[in-house]
Length: 413
Ligand SMILES: Cc1cc2nc3c(=O)[nH]c(=O)nc-3n(C[C@H](O)[C@H](O)[C@H](O)COP(=O)(O)O)c2cc1C
Image: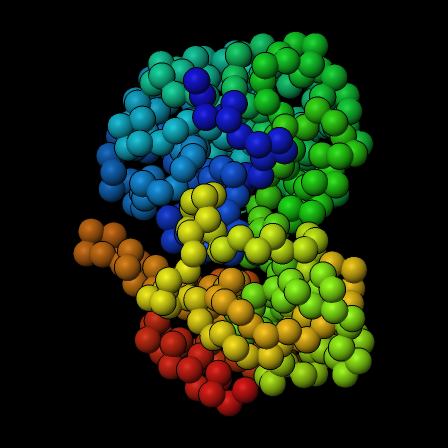
């Protein structure tokens, strides 16, 4: 039985993102809020078939606790696809996804990615080749190549290939990411799926920022099985969490003060607006809730959906006993005591990212420091002094310097 059938409805998927969703960043995202399913960044089958592992670097590195995880591959040579899919099975991946939507010129030139939209027969051969590995095979694609009118014939063809899941980025190849996603087509796409391949799951992708938006979309368009989020993690790394999201300015993790939320009135001295509350940051960190009251369950540990209580040795669960200002799900401000290291903060996520960067910087796969700088704005934004801190971080040369800057900053605030 494919793991796809065991996923909740709607399930939430971390989108494959080249040079982003590697083993390091997937762990960071999981620390903030675990998606139901992970995709790797894509790997070219022909490159691997010719040059072996050195052609793909860390793309297919994963840890055993990343479960379930799908390897995304691409290519226009069915034999290469079959070989790489089999290799992915050996590596322990739970599924294979074939990229048929990448608009990048190099993928198109090689006949892969979105070029597959124009070679539907080859696309069918590639899917059949991937299936020979014995793992569930899914496809991620776009509505068409040049025109949205192409969606019906292209998706019909894909749905006829007996795939386990079809992820649709609701734009054409030519639209890149420049126009809003075509959510208006969802009802017709759902109807098409129901008619042609009711067993194939349907995952919607494009412009969905977080779990709350995904749930809204799924409620509005019944029939959607999954929600895939990509760039939303840059704007909010906690986007998969169903817990309150800490403001970027929070420096300590907070336990939601359930008692005062349930029974106590809002503290009159508490701030009445996020702006006012932000002004207190430093002496009183502040948490905004997005998805309702916390459940009181301990922080989910890494990739596990069965919760595990943070331990004393967990460097990312700290500080109890401090007073904090929080906002509950109906917008009331309350003061409460930090009870346990329930949440990680943006800055702790950055520390975690640094630690994982160092851990995976091995002689076999040396990791360059500079690409890591692209992530600073994920963690350092939207608080007084953020731009200045980010600027200082951009001048660092290694993870030790980043830690020193953060230490200095946290002592000053
Ligand atoms: C930096 C970056 C890298 C991407 N790499 C891949 C990839 O390797 N495979 C893929 O199928 N899509 C890739 N995509 C597309 C995303 O998976 C997703 O379809 C797109 O960003 C739209 O979803 P979003 O609005 O939630 O970001 C990439 C997108 C970005 C921004």
